[in-house]
Length: 155
Image 1 (spheres, helix red, strand yellow):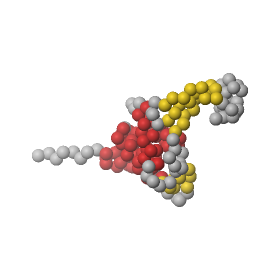
Image 2 (cartoon, one colour):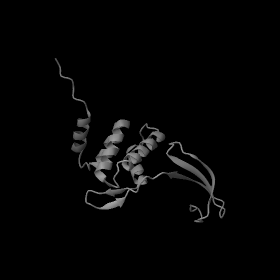
Image 3 (cartoon, helix red, strand yellow):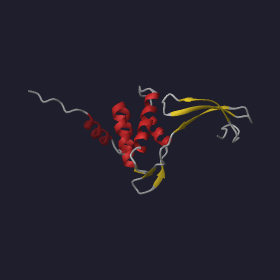
Image 4 (cartoon, rainbow, N blue to C red):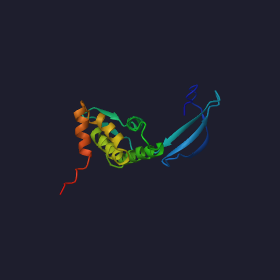
């Protein structure tokens, strides 16, 4: 592992333990060249996933990109970071277990929206506004009205 401080490629692992999410390994590392200490996380990757965009373009799946978009939708929401990490790990495991290496971006978006809807409706609407490319307030209004239950008929 390359040292983030000096670029030395010969770093030493000082401590390894399971991370809080129990899906990755947390490693404390030391660089003998500069004396820097840093932490890395290792995750098991079952297969290399490729995202197929709606325009046909293909790109490697990037867990960090998925995590950034979810964390943006969850900003300032009362959800514990551990719960967000668990959700992200669950989404990635679900994608890896689908049996396909090529996954349409639409499928990923739907899985993320499904997970967000269970955790926080505001984050769900935020993510949907980007995913569904809302252009005007009417788009929000229509989407939110679909979330609301129908009022009970009066007798």
